[in-house]
Length: 358
Image: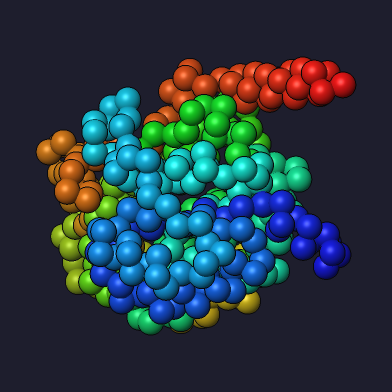
């Protein structure tokens, strides 16, 4: 893609950043990023923060940024109740406020470069939703720990980033997506169910800032709960703890051998994910050695997630979310054919408007 084509592509797109903060410790870094970003692409920040924080954000954000409130403080799902994942309400507010067909949606910790932003927008020429690959920058110990999860995901299939690029019509056709826990998976499945095409780009690397240690710890069970949306993965992870406990009953030498083999397997899988599709460019070797620790974490946390499921759902923003994401079959039942019908209607409306002008 030429430099001129990159510029034209970004000018014809819009960037949506849903935001809901309880404190402003990360504000200077975000403001610096928005100053860069606003020179590349039109930006909409949908801010659900408290009024005093919202006012401070408006004061410090670049004037080029559209800074708006979400239409609703939280989403309402078919089975999620009134207090669903509020990020979805923020995203859909931005989608409806946007005028461009090409959109980039990104969490507040995502940090695109101009080149990666142009690349993800460019891939929408042959897709309705594009999934790039996130990596942490900088990389403290807890980010290394979480990166091992990313590497294992890359080895088996693909990771789920905190950013997607998509065509606006793909979400308008379905009137949005459900405010479930694993909202990015729900968005992708909804677009595909409506007739859209997903494009996964595992070597399109986009940086993101690591969470604070306290937030990282709070995410452990919530991330495990996401696996209720992926039954085969859920079954594999539920088997980990029984296997480990069974190993403790073996004689000492056999027990040590089993545990070393389990640790070696996790490390080997993470190593495969790191080497896949230029992953060594952004994933340091030290992240691979955290894979056995992550596997132990998930072995325990997945059973904690089961307990939350039985109790009615995982705690999230003062409510409980029971649904991680809906199945492909359920979403096809709701949305099959909607994207084609929506675009046909858009074409007919555009043609009629052109004839009226003539």
